[in-house]
Structure formats: structure tokens, C-alpha cells
Amino acid sequence: MGPSGPGSGWPLAGTLLVAVAASMVAGGEDCLWYIDRNGSWHPGFDCEFFTFCCGTCHQRYCCRDPLRLLTERQQRHCLAF
Image 1 (cartoon, rainbow, N blue to C red):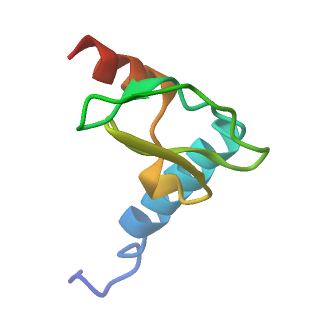
Image 2: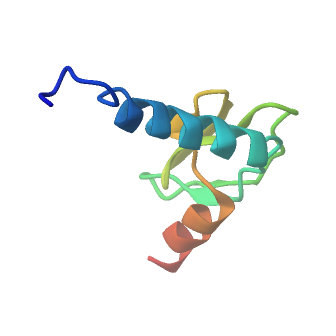
């Protein structure tokens, strides 16, 4: 079967399923303290339920977009480097 055959939507469906599962697991994820690109220290903060920490190592905020999720593990990795 070609790219338009049955099952061609599964990679997209699988990606969506993983994103939804990550958002459910990470609901209420905290943003840890960080240092921005200017060297300024920012204290950690809690995100509300059904939101989680998003952004980069140098800028963090709460959001609902699972594709922008920044897990606490990833945040700790930022601190190490």
C-alpha cells in the first residue's frame, strides 16, 4: 500500500497520543529556578492544574501546549550546563 493506504494516519495518531499523555502526566508541573541569558536569577514557580512548565533553559512560563513542555528533568539538565 502507498502513503495514502490504511494505517497511514497512525504515526500522527501516535504522536498525538504521546503529547496528550505527556500533558496529563505533567499537569501542574513546576518551573524550577533559572538564570536567563542576561545572567539574572529567576525564582521557581508553580503552574496551575492542567498547565505545565514551558519554554527554554533561559525563559520559562506556564502553558497548555504539550509540544512546548519543559519537564523538571529537562530543567535540571539546563542547570547542569
